[in-house]
Image 1 (cartoon, rainbow, N blue to C red):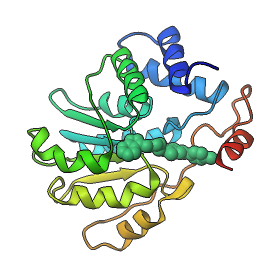
Image 2: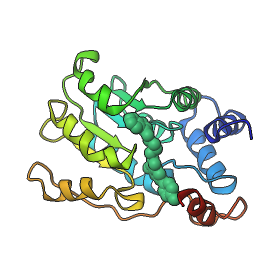
Image 3: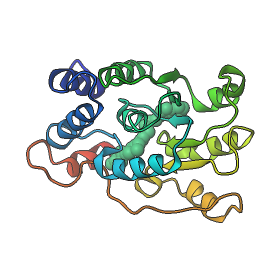
Length: 216
Ligand SMILES: O=C(NCCCOCn1ccc2cnccc21)c1cc(-c2ccc(F)cc2)cc(O)c1O
Ligand SMILES: [Mg+2]
């Protein structure tokens, strides 16, 4: 098909979600990805963990690594107090544009930075007039989690900053997981969950088989 999966998700959101209503945007993405085609959004089950951590942290400066369609970006932004700033890094310009339109449909204001984390993170201090990030959501290349966390440690984190990472067991970020569990700099907590959109809601391709085909 001509369009990309994120574009098909955007069209669904624009068709069924109420403009300015973040919850209806999240529900539209979740119903599309449960019933029509799987996509790698953090999803509603893990999204509830994300919500709880954001609410507990009450962050003012937030960084997200891996925007994709902007689903987790909307999840985070809808819970931030006015004046808080959310920056999200996406390397794929097409995905970044879809995310901007989904975030706009939710009535939220987020800065999407297009590029690779390894290039952008060292520039953030200078580029953005911010001191430190209070909360970081990590959901990009699993092989880059540890390297980018160490880049963040060079002066973008403070005592009490919270990092939350998706997929540390599936697909997995074993080096990151080991580092966070053994480094004296961090208190680590593991939230057991399930891969997004796998509980069969009926309809749509059986995601397990499709996913395995994709993975192989
Ligand atoms: O791969 C995943 N996410 C990453 C996307 C690329 O991110 C690239 N990327 C985005 C900004 C950015 C900035 N710098 C460098 C790379 C940068 C990802 C994959 C799965 C998954 C699970 C099971 C399967 F069978 C197949 C896939 C699930 C997830 O929840 C994920 O998040
Ligand atoms: Mg993920």
